[in-house]
Length: 118
Image 1 (cartoon, rainbow, N blue to C red):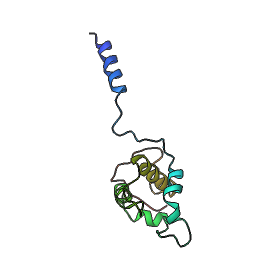
Image 2 (cartoon, rainbow, N blue to C red; image 1 turned 90 degrees about the horizontal axis):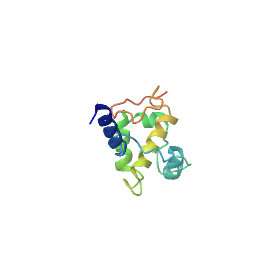
Image 3 (cartoon, rainbow, N blue to C red; image 1 turned 135 degrees about the horizontal axis):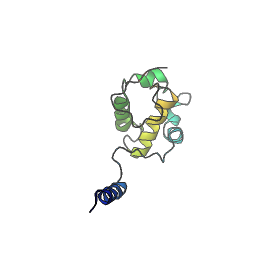
Image 4 (cartoon, one colour; image 1 turned 30 degrees about the vertical axis):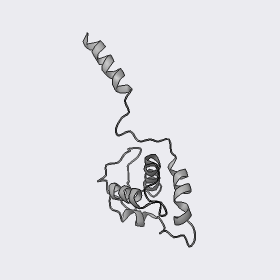
């Protein structure tokens, strides 16, 4: 087999396997946040804290915030959302509150990425 043909076979085989770090972007983060989070966090007398930049940045890193969301949220049924929903909500909160300056479309962010207030 020639080197070129071998390269094509390898490329075709790897194109059929899902990438381990490719996030599922089919879930809209703002929609997921509105449906899953805003009832408790964005209403007067809601049971959750206001999720402003200062509150979210207190988790220090992307990884800490991500772990908290997956272990503790939603309050009434922790850990029950699909991974794609947790990822989308995390991306939405980080982006909408500008917690990672200059992150752009780089996703997933490393867990060690520091959260900052704008």
